[in-house]
Structures are given as structure tokens and as C-alpha cells.
Length: 464
Image 1 (cartoon, helix red, strand yellow):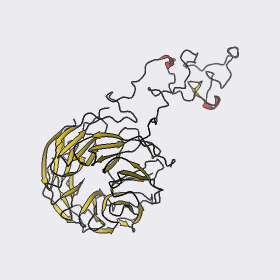
Image 2 (tube, rainbow, N blue to C red):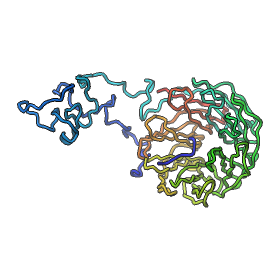
Image 3 (cartoon, rainbow, N blue to C red):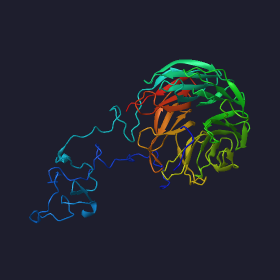
Image 4 (cartoon, rainbow, N blue to C red):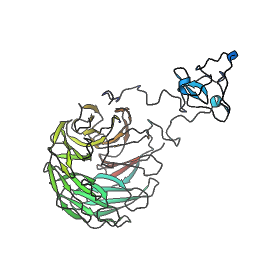
């Protein structure tokens, strides 16, 4: 089974994308979930009782036929099963218990619809977008419970003001007053972990202007201490918190656009050891760590924006990586999402390519290799790609911002590596960052986009 290290299902390689008239999963069943192939009401369907039914030859009941007695499923003819000691259609899940027949009940569950209070597979419901003020150049967003009050808070990397900005949540979808904390020059990516052993959640920020990772220790109530800087490569662009060496302490990895490398900072419980760097492609922009080769060693996948490829570095032991192998992708991959999209137990990778305005999907084979690309257009300038289950059907979905189109785009997975046509939501000017989490605590993921063009936050709360 594929395991993910990032916080964050093979069928035919076909994507159901943007095709009109494609049925959603489950369209062959009635709205209440029961089979539409069951017997008609009033057709003399047998009723289960507390006593076993007896065969009456004069009634013309032949063993194994519909409505005739049985003990096991194999006592019934093909297409039938044994329910309540009577043969019924195999697709009939209604059953009868306690001597009453429910087949005459005409009550139906409400059909899938937004606003009925019930999330349904294939249903994506967001209310009217809410806007909040944002600091200048808020290029990155994430959600975490920074103050341990059981409600998600919003964390922003504000490159324009050199701050980490916190807006505390209250579980209703509202965001509190913005509070900024110095983070060093040009923070562009964030992560959280418990880095100093005091039990409080801390924040790490990639300082693109300082060639370092800054640690801002948390006080447990939403406050952050002054930044402590640890050197990485040149111009870090993305950051990942993961226990790379399996010592139960969080480590940090960064992609470094200026030095074409990934730096590993080993957590010591009170800071980080000196960084160790691995060579990758040109201008790496995003990264993922997980079991790509299914051999118990964590592997690394990076997007190399400048060389238009994906770099794969297979793990060779604890905190050890082999040389990079590359797989071509679209033009200027800016971000990636990794999950088992086709359900074969192997991790697959999707890249968002800002130069060609598309996503590209490659299915993994479990050995660190990926199949041929499947491209599909998603609108102008896709960035901040992430994967999560937005409609609660168990299939991984995709969400991203389209910076050039001022919108958020979501593609719902329908199983087997397939996706429904894209759904889009208008937000503010030049959305750049995107975060997903249950802000209003209704059990369904919400979305927050950072709009750098007009310094706003666009909040899309679920409205199932």
C-alpha cells in the first residue's frame, strides 16, 4: 500500500476531462442508494419472518427461483442471492427484517444537491466567496492549529513585508485579526512541526532572499519568537517537513532554485544540523517525499521548472538518496501533487505547468518509474497544485489556482485515475497560494486562496 510522507486509485489510461454528458459515479442507482433493478411493488415478494419458509409444490415455487426459499446464496439461481431465507435479486440491498416488508415504502432520500446538509459523491459545493485583507505579496498559505485550541488557523508567507502572518480561526469559517511576525528576507514557503521539544507547534519559513530556513518557535497560544536561520542552498523556493531519518524528530527539505539542489536539514530537537545537499535539475520549484518505489526507503520527487522535467531520487537508506533520474513533463512545471490516483497501490504524480497551461499525469509502477504522460488543459497559469478528497467519495481530487485567470479550479476524481470536468470559482486578482482545510468544521474541506494582485484572501466555505 502506498504511504505518503507529505501532509497532505491500473485502469485504461483515459481521462474523462471536459467531456459533456459524462455520467458521474453512481448514476446507475436510484437517488436513495437502492438498486433500480429490484422487483416492482406489489409483485408478491416474500416477507421474511422468524420461522423458515416452507416449500409448497402446489404454489409452483421451484427451489432457487425468485421469491422461493433458500438457506445459502448458492441455493439461488444466477443473478439472485439469499436474503431472509428467500431468493431476491442480487442487487436488492433493501432486505426485510422483523417480519415487515419495506419494498412498499415510497419514502426516498433527498436527491444530491448543494445546501441539503449532506455531502454527496461528485458534489462540490461552495458558497459565495468571502474576502479578507492580506499582507503584500502573500505568496503562500497553509492551515494548522497553531494555538492548540482545536480550530484551524491561517498562516501566510508575506514576501512583501518579510513576515509570517497569522489569522486565528474559531471553527466558524471566520478569520481573526492578522498578526505579523518577522521571518527574515522574502519568506515564500512555510511548514509546521514541533522542533524544540516543548510540545508547542513551531513554524519554519523558506527565506528566498536569505538562502536559509528560519525557525519561529511557537508559544502555544499563537505567538511566534524571533526567527533563527539555518543555511540551505541559493534561493529556496519550496519547503517540506518530514521525518527523513526516522528518528521521530521533524526534518526539513528545501528546493533551491538558484543552486539547482535540494537541501536536507536534519532536526536535532533543538535546531538543525548543517545542511546536506543533493543535485537535481534546473530551477527546482516543488518537492514530495514518500514511498514511490515501495521498498521502505523514502524517495524524493521534484519539479524542475527550468528543465521541464520531474526529478526522481530513490531512497537508498535512512536519509540517503541516489542520483536523480528525470522524466519529461510540460513547460515550466511549478508544482506537483502525488497520490494513488488509479487505485493500484502505487503513487502517481501530477504536475501543474505554467508555461503550457495544463496538468500532466503520470501513473507510477511502484519501482520508481512513471508511465507516459496524460496532458489536459486547466486554464491560464496553474499553480499551487494540491490533492485531497473534496467530495468525500474516497477518491483523490485536485485543486489549484489559475493565476492568469483569477480563479480556483477543482477536478474531482471519479476512480481509476479518471477525473470529472473541471469546476471553477472566481476569486481575487492573481491568486498565487492555496490551502485546504475544514475551517467551518462541517466535515468538508474549505479552500483559501491568496490574491497577490489586490492583497486579499478569498475564502470558499463548503455549502453541502
